Length: 345
Image 1 (cartoon, rainbow, N blue to C red):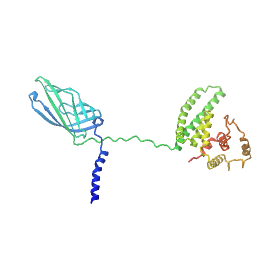
Image 2 (cartoon, rainbow, N blue to C red; image 1 turned 60 degrees about the vertical axis):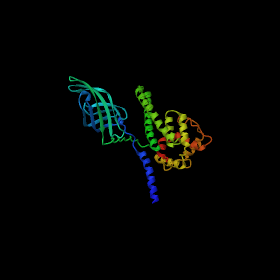
Image 3 (cartoon, rainbow, N blue to C red; image 1 turned 120 degrees about the vertical axis):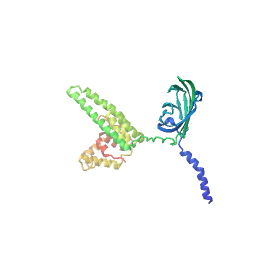
Image 4 (tube, helix red, strand yellow; image 1 turned 90 degrees about the horizontal axis):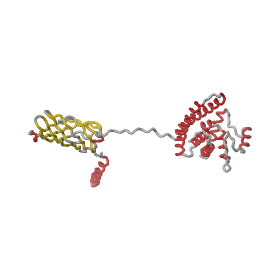
């Protein structure tokens, strides 16, 4: 029994805390758009005009538009007010028809409670007409049994799922291939210009503009991948090729060296590369010095290569001979075959 009593005491202590955590902030009419319905009791004091005190009740709709609101007719027609604070609605002075004369109503405020259950306000008026002039006052008291309107449901815009590094590289490579096509078209136009003597300047400038517009975007996509993973093999390979197409030899080798040192070119990866390339070339096996006389001769001669490969300086590594093979292969090898055949997990 004592345990149950302790449980009730604990529950009684936690309940107010839980309520405090989930309770909504005070209602603010100045942030609401929509309608609210009120029963408004209007008391008009005409004793200074030798009349009685009238009391009437109206069903009134208030149309809210955040900082402004239009209150329905409570005796002198609809009126537009402005919220001067979250729950204080201010009405400016106005002159209204009041047969057989007119009445000028003073500025006034009505005050809403934060639970949306009621409001109250009061204004004075000055009447003038053929039957004389006098002054009086009118008080307003509104009640609302519906409570505060339900807050609008805000659905945040959905974000597209973040692409994986592989998908980012694939998207960048699609643009890179388009760039290579444009550079091929540029070479063709320059050749036509040279052979025919007819000016291709307009077309050349148009293609060059497209290249200049596309390449910063390509580099930004690869940079995003490499910022997260500087040793990403495929991104470094593609950036190296882009830099080679731009004639930036030094940057080409910076990216190519990163690819070579990334650890991705393992024995199993190279074996898969060789099998794929051999298949594309129509060979039963990849030609190597052990099974090809030509490759034995090339293998002997490549040790003396220093620069001049496709017009590019190929620095020879003195400390790590294994990277020299990869560097020469990257420079003279079939790039498209490499990219298509390598899968880095």
